[in-house]
Image (cartoon, rainbow, N blue to C red; front, side, top):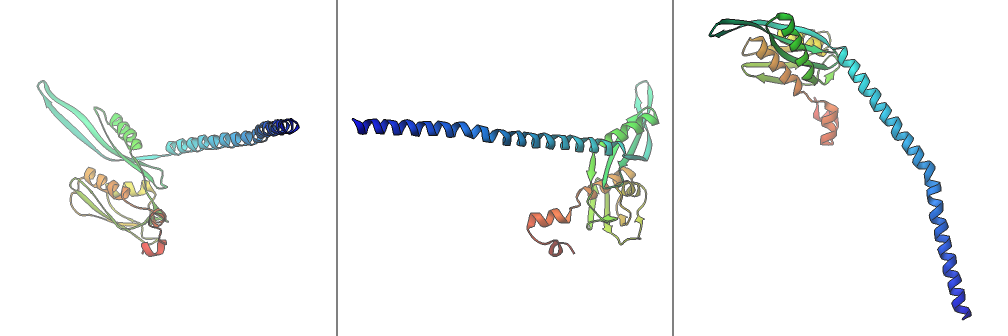
Length: 216
């Protein structure tokens, strides 16, 4: 009998110790949870600040008209005149966009083109004042070659390509338009080439190779 009583007492003590241990864990983890919650809140605040900064950068975008064309549509009652505008926007720090707008008045067509360009922004990887590597851009009948240039070369481009390069913040580059001279085709080909540019750091991480071996 005495042995059974001792065993029951030992069981009770073991259960009490487990309950005490279970009770102490939340008390210790409580402050840690509060610290984690504070850290998460701080991260959310930082994200909101970054989003606000991005919105402010979008407000700083500069716009420039590339071409304005008069469009005539023949209908049963006569002719309807309207204007088609092509515009580019950029912050001169590696972000550029191209857009097209159409309206019966020139100012409205330009405004639509600028709004459309802001929806089609492209991030261009830069190597100082030039692009990272040689690339070709093609769109419709337009074909353009973009080649990096040493500092001090300037923007060797004309028409639509020059406007886009300046808004993208590229100060030294060699370009050559090979096929169509249509400003719309040349502009879209230029944007195609800029959008295909790659960042050397990203490529080296993806391939797990040093940048010097990949990039020459």
